[in-house]
Length: 162
Image (tube, rainbow, N blue to C red; front, side, top):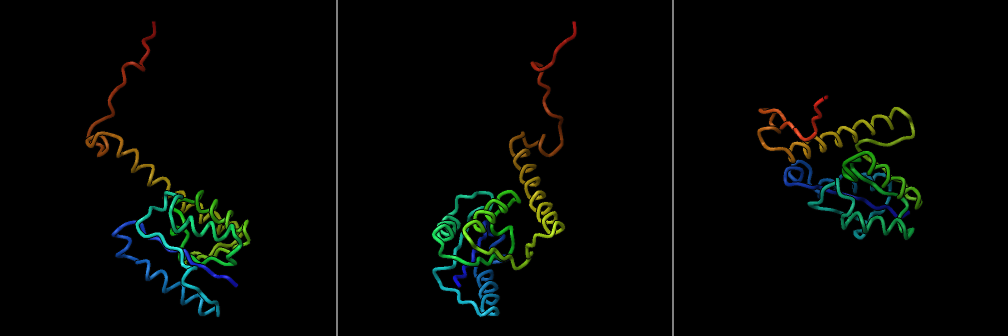
């Protein structure tokens, strides 16, 4: 059986909280407990890449390996290591499964149970909403983003009845 792992951290604060090496150690330990062999070339990693972006070197190599039928099982610590939001997570999982790869998350095992699927959607959706709020605030003037002044009134959009 060809087993692979995917690991990712996107920022320095994440790197301090859970390093890539810590993720690899956890995944290696899990693989060894199942008597699976993990070859060094089967460790796909993205250090410093955001999970919001689907164009990542390690992820690209992983997808190529899956498409080439060189993988049977993929181990990942948690869904948010694969992608930030639920839609991307599900697209990637479905793509990998379509190539015959079993995707296994250690922290939040996925099942086809509707309750598990709903919980995964809620977690992913919350991340999308937080990202959208951040982007919306970043596009507004600082005082407005902080809620200290109302949005500017666009008088061109007003119509006077008459």
